[in-house]
Length: 217
Ligand code: ADP
Ligand code: ZN
Image (cartoon, rainbow, N blue to C red):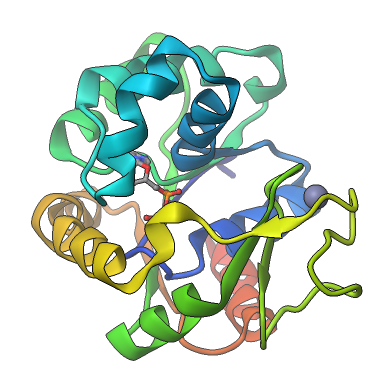
């Protein structure tokens, strides 16, 4: 049984929410390149400054930058038994670089979970999405509200809306996904590593499917 899980799907498919649940259940770190980049912006690092406007416009950060960031993260000690990738790889060169890293680190093949959703689901989800400014936990105004309005259940920090979650930027992210990331689906399918789940229902139903797929893999 493999312990590396890659989550694929368009923005708003629920990759982050599924990753959060899987991470708790399987005791594996949840690695989101989007969150790693947002941390750099929050810290005000040189890297953060470089990527801020790119992310706000819905474009992808360049491959070399994201690959270096990811490589550094998965070589840390907590990743030695496996990890869950959310938002990486997003381009064919990133997928190639990842395969090379796995080879060098003597890792087995990953399981690639493709979360399929239709466009209306995405628009609805993203417009109500909120994220904890402290720990990054994801909420939704109507479907996953916090216990106390506006603050995180876990760390009590305020919930915020991401700068790239406004409708025009969401559309741009969607078209970038279709152009650059969607071709990876066929790539992983050919390698026999892809499993699909229907991401349109509410999270508990999606998780039931995810756990079934994991049992069978
Ligand atoms: P979503 O999956 O909802 O689009 P993420 O948090 O995964 O949100 O990503 C937010 C932004 O971070 C992306 O639009 C992009 O600018 C940048 N980003 C994240 N991961 C990558 C990646 N692997 N390659 C390039 N850019 C990335
Ligand atoms: Zn929190």
